[in-house]
Image (cartoon, rainbow, N blue to C red):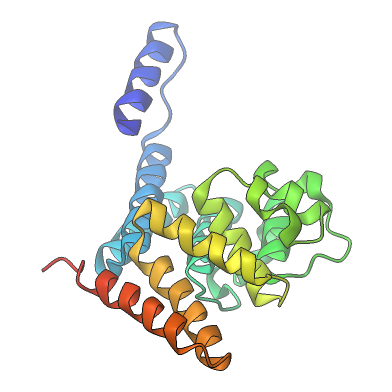
Length: 215
């Protein structure tokens, strides 16, 4: 449906005399959307293929800032499923990154000292201004909410209520990979607290999600 709407908008723009977006931009966007979908669904092979397509299309421009943006998008989505690294693909291009990309990279790393909320994507501004978890529920987009939750968790700023929010956000969208990751956090907490009933309940949810793997 999103694709059809986009094509309709492009058709209207063409009728109005505006040139259509270049192929690389459309292909890169399609690749990123595919990466996000397949990654969150837990299909690593298709996610890798889609990301490679998006990166290759952006690289056709010879612009490090655009490829850096693609790399950061990947790191952000991975943070939603609690998969963290130093975003090496971005780091290799950081010198040529635009200020907006540098701010987003700092946000993902948890280096918020001196970070201006105005330089971030608008959905993260409430979280940054509040210093963290207090405004997590104000992030309407589910992917962005999980990214923010992952960043807060990495920084040790996410309270138990935020973990529950992340679990239910992933569950509501049917996203296997982040749901399993966040349920794993809940399971560890239940076991550490000696709450056998809660641990058993969470384990049943994990086992149920595991049965959803497509052949």
